[in-house]
Amino acid sequence: MQYVQGMSMCAIIGIFRNKEAGRMAAEGLSIMESRGRDRSGIESGDCWAIGHNLHAIVGNIKQPLKGRGVFAANCEIYNWKDLCQKYGIKAGNDAEAVFMMSENGILPERIDELDGDYALAYYQIKEQRLILARDLIGVKPLWFAESPEGFGFASEKKALERITGSDNIQELNPRKVLIYNPANNKVSFKRRSFYDITPEHTETEEEQKSRVLELLRKSIEKRVPKKKVGLLFSGGIDSTLLAMMLKSLDVDFTCYTAALESGTEAEDAVYARKVAEELGLKLRIMKIELENVRDYLKKIVPLIEDSNVVKVGVAVPFYVCCEQAKKDGVKVMLSGLGSEEIFA
View (cartoon, rainbow, N blue to C red):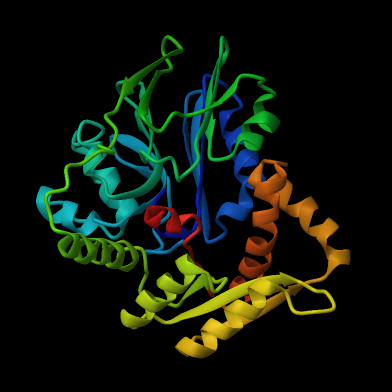
């Protein structure tokens, strides 16, 4: 699991071999409106359409982007400026950089050079060739539906369910690149190599400690935009370590904690307050009233597209914190969920 998650979202959608593709794409974007409200756009042609909802973090460039092909992505590419320099590309943000790489034939062959989280679609109009890909870990969601009548993809499963009525909706395996040809309605896959999970360690223990600390620092630094951010904070190992490193990087951030309202202060809130006071952190504690939980569940279950008790239990405080963060003008939330596992 990646060490620090920067939670920001966009939505992408595509419909092929359907005369109503434009209308269906617009309906799908409406269903996924919560994933991006800054800008929305659709590019379409003969029986196809690709759409995008933007949640702007770097720049405010409207998608889909169109040249020889049409490109839409939900992405956070941390090394996009380095890639621009390497390939002589002029781009205003990460999505535009990946688009130009696709236009120039650099992608998907060199997709492993992308450092970040992404779900992207690039349609070569003349060649009638659609390429779909995700980051290797699968942080950014992407679903697709294929049938004898046509093909569709979207950031959320429910969007495809509602607009296509298909019962054959699959999550794209992040270890594969999907290639679709609308001319013959055929889908094929290209397998990607995964990370080496058993690297050789030749350093001393002290060198390894120093290396881990540097990797953690870089992991956090590249995910922090040049604007204020929020941190989901419990006072535990992972979020406290994140807070300390954010502070050392002089990042403008606020910690958010949510706890169920009861007779006594919740344990998470107690520890969060104690650690925040010790480290001099800005902390906002959101109280969850029991009578409001049902209303939260009605909103959260459709959003995460899952009714698993554990996932919903985690999502409720996340949702409450993100609601407040949005009111505070925060567009990116950081979370260290599960990161302490690397020290187990």
